[in-house]
Image 1 (cartoon, rainbow, N blue to C red):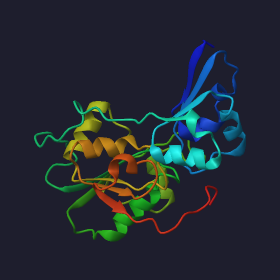
Image 2: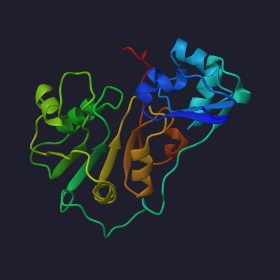
Image 3: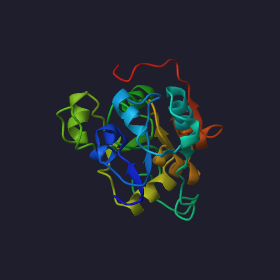
Image 4: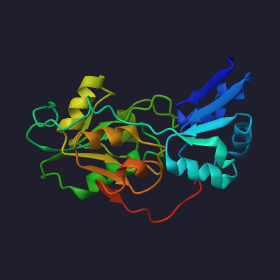
Length: 238
């Protein structure tokens, strides 16, 4: 509890329940977080007034926080970024799963917000079995509350097992980078994003990218890639 302390929580799904934000601090206090909806829960929003500043990662989040009633002079944009010395176009890079075929790649936790189930369903419905395309998914979520432990279990549970789907269990970073650089298309169609690191990393690699045309990712994605139109908004609980 120093005189100048930044309280940060990067797992946005847990951000409002983290004890870090409810501890008592001394001196100048800064809260730094990512949030994916246009409203904070009331209790957590009230707690943010305890801090002298709030740092967020996108202008979308800045605008929403001010609209909800937080003082604009206490909100600061601290955008995330991408390491261009690591994520850059390189046609010489290959991955065993992307050779000699057209591959879609998805990376992110399997949960409702990330629309993983819907992405897989769309792939299966769009392409015939005789078409030379595959979907590579790295979507493990061992902390999900759906009662299922593995990606394989979820595919079976939802009737989405398909020979054209390849599963990677969150590969090492170097393999992940090779996959982003060598896949044909990166797909991310989340219902909301505070920033979206995999998307900006894929775009930095020059990989054609599909994404939902909404929320914090438009900070860097707008005007690039292939945005998916948003038809309407729903409450978070829907």
